[in-house]
Length: 195
Image (tube, rainbow, N blue to C red; front, side, top):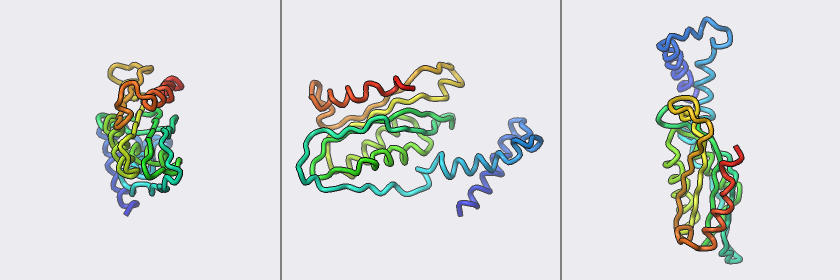
């Protein structure tokens, strides 16, 4: 099934290149490019669109931990739905558990799964927030993403240093002056400065 999709996409991408006036078959470096592009899209770039969600392991919060759990510096790679050009950066995720806590690596897996599809950053942020809120059955979840968009760097305005930040907060993260909110904002303050 996947090979059939790759074969079909290869034909169409080759036709796309020809329509742009690029004779990819004349160059030994690009003669197989349509097939490589089709495989890259299906096996990596849009993996979140063609696979099941990651299995999210949750554990009982036996010790009734009621502090904040924060994971920062989660690598994020995605594709802008408007131009099909990459955007990339870092995500930070936090929650205040009720009866469940999540396996730490699962936060990274959730971000990666939602990121690997064509979309806008605003939607990516909201999707991660909704998924974690439902899986953890908790009201206090925060997601922050800082991303550089190649559509702003390579085309259009051509500003290579601009960084877009999107946030989706709920529960205590929405309360101004709340120490948990302030702790999360402090933890994510370096997102975007490192790249």
